[in-house]
Length: 101
Image 1 (cartoon, helix red, strand yellow):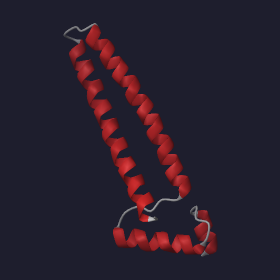
Image 2: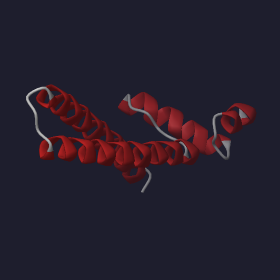
Image 3: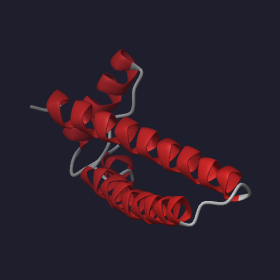
Image 4: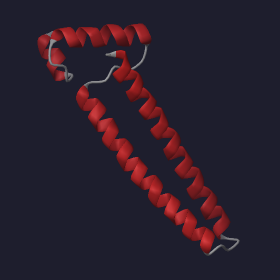
């Protein structure tokens, strides 16, 4: 079991067992420190993409033409989905961090 715990990113069997029990009880993910690090990096990347999309949408608003309305709406919808995803990930991370406190 110690090998399985380390393979899954836990330092010892106790932390792995705790994570397994919590995941089973709450039916939610229990993340390792490395998984949290990867999710945070993902959120930073998504944030950068969202900021770039907002810049494009603002540029389209400055040079607005009828054909640009569809493009602008698509970009704004994508930016909104990115923001919603980031909010869900941050909620998951916060919940996970508070669970261990």
